[in-house]
Image (cartoon, rainbow, N blue to C red; front, side, top):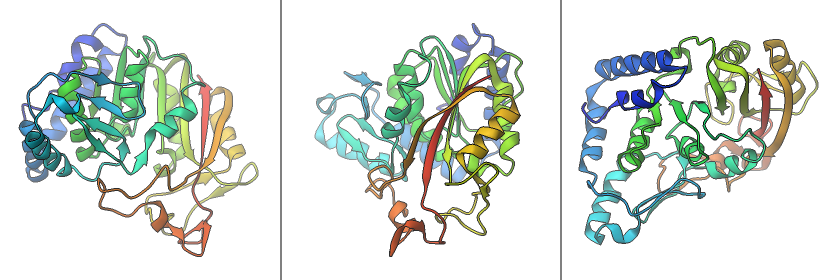
Length: 325
């Protein structure tokens, strides 16, 4: 329990306009941990407590693979034990990372998404940033590397929070955190974040317009939303509502066309809407590795026609929207 120090973010956040919001998230996170099933948490905490207490010779937040330490920082025997412990936290979905010479080849090459958007967003220097559905926090570290003042991640999957804490043990950033919460746990804020990232989440929401409204209300005046989501080819008003699963995912509710999503954003109140990238998901970006024991993209596509999912829907295609409050 003592390893989950969500209040470590308070000294930095208390000097910002969102201090009350962050305090609320800290309290909710503490409650989540107190009520959680102890089985998995105790197993993962054992992994965290087994990590070596050493100061890494390197912290690199600006490379494709977020790096902590170098190979020569620890012995080969200790590195083997460290790797065994890190594998207890599988599957590693978002990355990649390099921890004391151990390459964690995650299912998603999250650096490719970052490359697509980083030159189109407002500079993050000194900004208050929120990443909803942040996973293990890969993009949060890249945001901190860009100089963000405060990086808040929201992620309900506890194993992803634990993966973040592995990096945090060595980076020891006072300004970056992942809370074990869902987006609906974020309290309303009249003058909130400068930049909000919602990437890979919209199609998991039963009410996408409610999600967009929530993000709008969490932004500061003239704040920026970076929205990445699945889209389909189609006209304004066209939406795919999968029957059953989509690419083996059971929680995909609505996949809009680009014009439909632009209309949703306008209806929600956003301005200056632009699409900065449209790309097909490839096996280079999402793939099966030794660090994830589950299926991946190639298992979700029709083996006879990669333009379709196994259910017969259009294969995953994603777009990145940037807009302002």
